[in-house]
Image 1 (cartoon, rainbow, N blue to C red):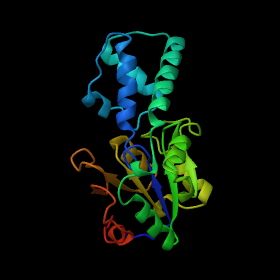
Image 2: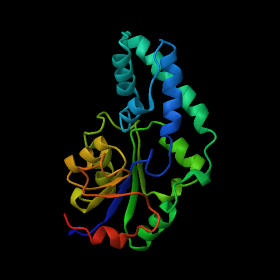
Image 3: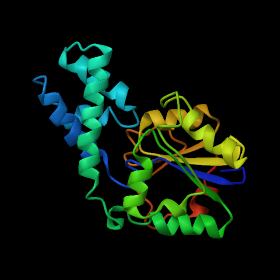
Length: 219
C-alpha cells in the first residue's frame, strides 16, 4: 500500500470471531417453521447481509410469501434465538492473532474501528472482552444502507477524521470488500482467495500478520 495507514476497520463476524455458525443455526431453525431446510452453502450468501435482507432471501429461496409485518416478527424471532446462542461466547473465541495485530496497530499510532452490519455487535464485543481495543464502533443500529454500500465504513472515517484513502478494511465477505472499495479504501480479504478475488490482498488469518505486511503490498 502506497499511502500512509491511519485507520484499520474490522468487520466482526468471520474476521474477529466466528458467529456465522450461530446465524446459521438460528436461520435454519426459523426456516423450519415454514418447511424449508436452509443449507450451509445458502448461509454463505447471507454473509455481510442485513437481517431483513437475509430473511427476504430465505423466503425467496423457499418460495414463501410473508407480509411486511410477518417478516418483522420472523426477523425478531431469529434474533432472539441468535442472542441466546451467542451468550456462550468467551474471550477464547477471538480468532488467533487478532489481539496481537491490534496491539501492533496501536503501537504504530494507527486507529482501529469496527464496521459491522450486526445489531448485536456491542454484545458480542462485550462477551469477547475486546470493546476497549477499538477507537470507534459502527454497527447495524447506526446505518441505513447495507453493504455493498460503503456507509458502515465511511462513518468510522468521518467520526475519527481519517480520509478513506488512508484506511484499510478487513472483511470476509465479497459484499464487504465491494463496500470498502466503493468507499475508496484498501480492502484486505480474510478467508478464501477464490471467494474474495476482488480484494486488494487476501490473508488466511491474523497469526503472524503484521503492519509491515500491509505496507509491502502496493495498490
